[in-house]
Image 1 (cartoon, rainbow, N blue to C red):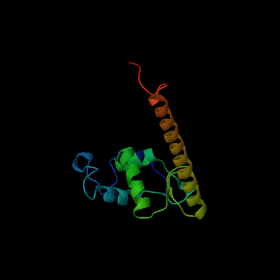
Image 2 (image 1 turned 180 degrees about the horizontal axis):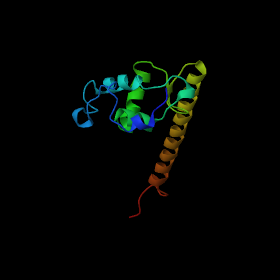
Image 3 (image 1 turned 90 degrees about the vertical axis):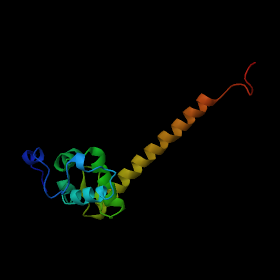
Image 4 (image 1 turned 135 degrees about the vertical axis):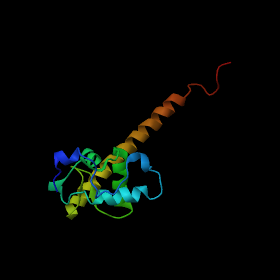
Length: 135
């Protein structure tokens, strides 16, 4: 599925079935489900047809955060194998899923390293060379 640049700047596709932003709050009950369902119809199949988050944002009139939340729901709730490495697409092969898992694992490990470094930095800030404060 290729994205037509001219239609990307036009009004959102009626396939999305999404009301304008002011009418639907992202925290409203069922809002994420509708967004995820509409996004699913726009996701290309296969790595060769991958699109991007900004392209999906323009097509859906959703924010980056809303697009990412909809992708999260598709993967975790609806078990759709959406890959967000090397573009955004629906996996067609086990190798595509392996790519997604490797990417998520690397990002997760980087976040854990950063958390550890921040904990160590906090400890050095809280450390005192003496047991008791000077009087």
